[in-house]
Length: 116
Image (cartoon, rainbow, N blue to C red; front, top):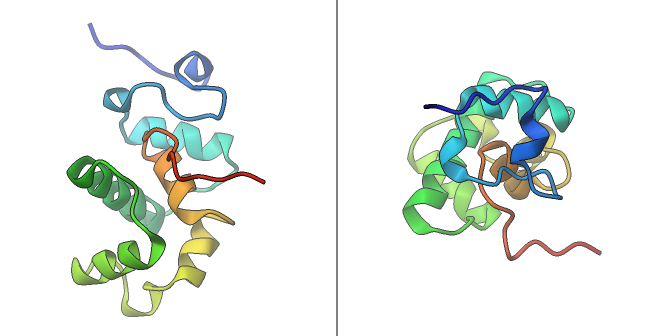
């Protein structure tokens, strides 16, 4: 039986920081709910980034460094040429592009995240 996660019951699947408890429960509908909870209106570019960071994490079992991630996006030709920069990613995912994109991708909180 598949679990049905909705905006009404999503909190029971999140940790205290708003990250999905189980990476395997994620799908694009979950990303849309998480985006709404984080005040982000998803665009096609958001979804491209979310899928790319999820794929990176699954392949390497870690979050990428921003510069490395931008280089990988460009190498894979996933965005328009003028969007391969940290300014654009910060516009999509304010303040913390990698952790926030990871959160929307259903990934666990990075152990490298430092909060002051």
